[in-house]
Length: 412
Image (tube, rainbow, N blue to C red):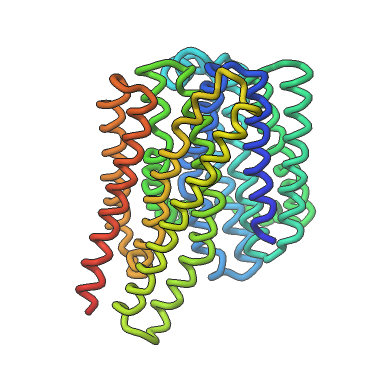
């Protein structure tokens, strides 16, 4: 139940993207891909790890204390985000020049900044609903936001023909609908009456210290999976960014259908197995490794069948300008199989709380990805981008395996 709304939201994004392909040129779709990629990473830095700090604090507090923590987090966020986003709007032309190759107008920048601002409150509200185990209410809100976004896309993109601006505006309107509900619940429950500014400095320092370590790992994971789009934009063209972004949608679907279930179900199961100590860690890890190889082989078979179907169906549903994206789909999915393997192989590292090891592995893989892209993209274009993705994910998988073997060996 908890994942229904999230799956619908992701599916909505994919369906909407396929629809707008018939309205946007590959270059415009490339710009949209860059904006959406920025919308994934900017809120991470803007939020300062405060949502993650709230997660660490939540289950150690009484309901009354949780409201105090929530208020502190929101006040910190508002004090940081409003000046930064206002500064960003004043320098919209600079942002467009350096991030979007002078292709994004001020309206797009303004809508993107608004989306980044609202996302913190939207995700924080949904986070609280998960902790309160209000699954039905959570799913209904997400489904409602999906409906708002779809209707707005149909209106802005297909009726008013606002292009990229319409898509970003529709997504912002969808997330705004969640924030309106969140604000209504917040004031109805009277949480705003518990704001105590005199306690803010001490609590703010503690929460920032708790949340900050989460930022590097999230940023590096983003750099590993999406940083290549900017290199492709700088060294080739926005049109090729659009083609690559469409091909990479297959990878995003793989993440939603394969990686997220592993992260949400299998990884917690393995952590429970390690914690129970019913068997030696070598035995548990051997079973985990065997499961990993079967999962990777099974995924390889499925992506091959899926790619064959894509080649059969693609020419009928994709505009001619986008059909070259089909040739890269299998290779991007193949790279994601290595990423699937790291979810299995890193279970023992997570259980052993090897956070610095995990951070280092992320940094090496992300650095390799960027380095290979800089070397290969100017020569081979999208093919170089895909090769860099396979190489960096493959290295990430190998390093995780070696670190896990070393840990298991030392544990005896």
